[in-house]
Image (cartoon, rainbow over the protein chains, first blue to last red):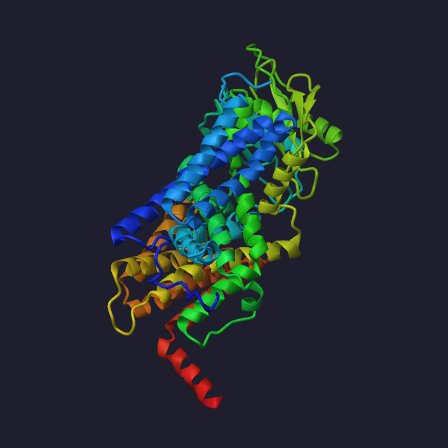
Length: 116
Length: 504
């Protein structure tokens, strides 16, 4: 622990320091929800996209994507809590999810049949 | 605030709160998982009626098939886990469909009738608790999986928070203040086994991977999911039942053929559609002995004994995943390495426990001021989990020796006493005055562990169980030291520090 940051103490505020107390709490709840559901969605989309696009055999692509999935989720969660504001975190996560979903749709991941 | 300046406080906050909300579950997962490194030894101790004997796996397989054919003539599948000399039991599962329910029995390896050993879940209970928390399997696994994910995040944010890893590793200031001491202890336990903590968390997530993160499999295979396991090299290709009945070969015959083909005896047989003309028996091998958990299989026609299929070769990614399972379960580890894994697991539990205590110490009211609701709740849950769970485990072992052998539902009684002792000690901790809570509950846990030894010596008293009894004494001694330390008045610390200053 560095001397400039005190050890884990009760007075430490959540990352957002603006607004009244309940607004701060709401922002924390928002970050937790975004980290859990948004982080999982991003990880799920990366896993699905990897499984259908990686230039490997189908089985190997699935295994590779799953190996990486939990690291992706951890990265997304760290991003959510490190972002300056909840809004920026939400834009980052939802934007990434939208791009991934579009790529997955283009790659045929949402179609009913098995991709070729 | 700049990006970089904001990052570490944000991660410190994340580490504190992520660690707190899952800490109690993680402590239980670490403790029962660590005990599971010795699952087989625990099971041997808990079934003292079984002795190491010469066994004939082929005969055991045929006898087990006789039991299964009589017990469940219309099953969709059987799993027969063959006995080993030091585990003279044939373990069988049978089911109608893969949707469950799965039935289970332990059989005598010679006669194929239910074992005469005492009714107990033995090491299997602690092992399953490690990832199912004694809840319905899917519920328990999702809770443990989610907690493991939060642990991964707590580890990452903890590393960021604790940037001076090397310098602080050599820092232990037990006399500075209670909070400093707990922080240093938490850092020490965490950093000392950090590679283990990261490995065990990520590989643990991978063992639940197909359930937690099925989307890759889903996107690439849609409704052909079973094809993945064949293409990945994890399973041989199966076949549909013919719908007509036919007498299969005795299972022991398949064991003999598989032993010749595979170079060693299989450890289990998986029978699909037993009694059908197109029934298949897959022999599952432990080979290759090593890190990877590939479990090669050879599928045989159950009627003719002809080989049908083998696993396809597994690719690098699938091998990596199976190595992760292997690392997590540590079946490959010989004695010395297993001891190291065990100690690392204990350090994991100690990291969680010291982190939980640090949370309360850092927020403790000064002097005689009353503690708030949140602090009181966390302190009570800390005492109830950190002292209560070990007491529960000790009661589980003690019940194994003390409960009458002919008690109906004996195995459930053992589990009931596990939870009963846990809740009892947790209640004692909640009701005791703040100063007495830790010494009282740790003392109760220690006493229960120590009581196992005379109970075993009086009722069984065999030399082969002495190592287990010594382990129980060591755990008891560790808990006594903890109870004594917790009983020391806080002023003693301050006094010692003051003497130090005066001497200097």
